[in-house]
Image 1 (cartoon, rainbow, N blue to C red):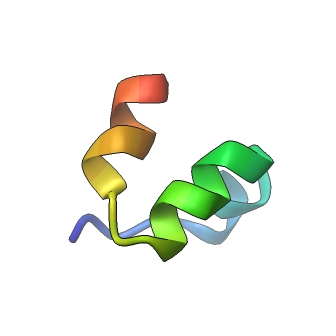
Image 2: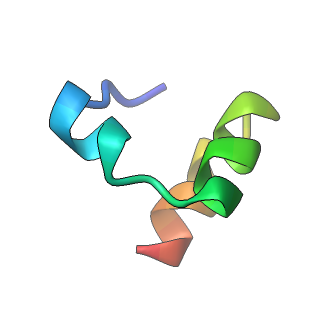
Image 3: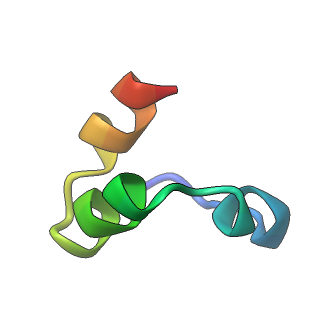
Length: 32
């Protein structure tokens, strides 16, 4: 899994946080 900086993590949307918790980092990256 890619390392996320604290700054980037704070900028995540609720949807991105949901995907991250579900282990779907590729989905989070696709949204950006």
